[in-house]
Image 1: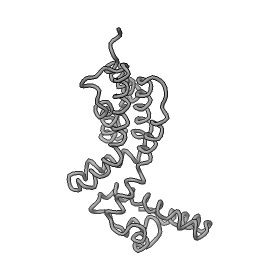
Image 2: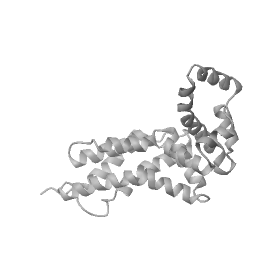
Image 3: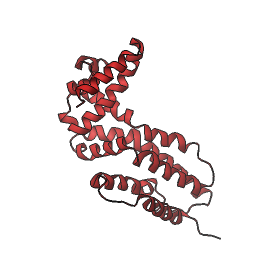
Image 4: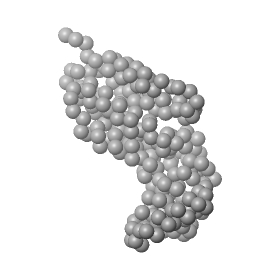
Length: 218
């Protein structure tokens, strides 16, 4: 929960904005507050009135923008998903050989997703709440993760058609990106207590993928 001093500072800053500017910022402020509340309390225990208090508005104001708690959660997940969207946007601009593009895509995933604190916490939430609210988690897996897998698979398939990659069991985007998700899980488990040797881990991942997919030299 925000301290009284933090709320006072926020209110002073908000007063510097016009009414229209404050209104335009309100949905994003509510979603940021909802993220913190859902992560700290879990979906069931999170209360809309506490989310409103974080922003300094009434519960009714939250419902103006997000009529139900489930709608609020869904909007929050999309709001937090910027790293996923960035990966997709940048993936469309990749150039070079298919191996170079795949290497860049994997590094994008590490840089934009695994290093983002809010993405890690969203994954923690999915692990802890997924059994109780499978439809919420499944919907956002389809919206956020599947497009990246589709993009990666298309890149691999094109590389196979061009003879740069070999076809086989390793040519599956979900398997190729899985070590990145495994690193996020390890980070969540150890919470910074252990040195996970992340740079070495990433290089090992890239080495395994690119050598595993490389077509045999003629």
